[in-house]
Amino acid sequence: MKTWHVEGAVVAAILALSTYLLTPCRTEDWLAAAAGQMDFHYMIVATRLDEDRPLPKDGEEASLLWLTRYLLLKEGLWASAFLCAGLYPPLIAVGVFLLYAPWRKFWVKVHPKKVL
Image (cartoon, rainbow, N blue to C red):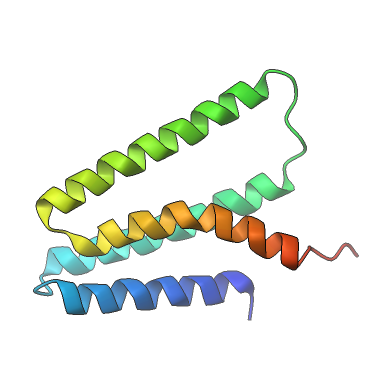
């Protein structure tokens, strides 16, 4: 079993449990949880692509900084919208989404990729 399988299963369990416990289990609650799961898988792929990318060239660092800023702003706005709408599963997904990159950096540091 690959690391991303375990990570995806943990996130699915968190989102399913939070949907079941924190919402009236409407269709939109489950759809929001599913969207959060897909958002997480998107982040997994994006993070893996970033890990395999060569170091930034001159001028690319500013773009990467803005990419991070926009990500944080976007997720902050989504979190505010979900909180106002009472949609707690995607609110939790926002937190998972934002915590994944630091978690992945830690994981790679502890378990470096094996080069064949």
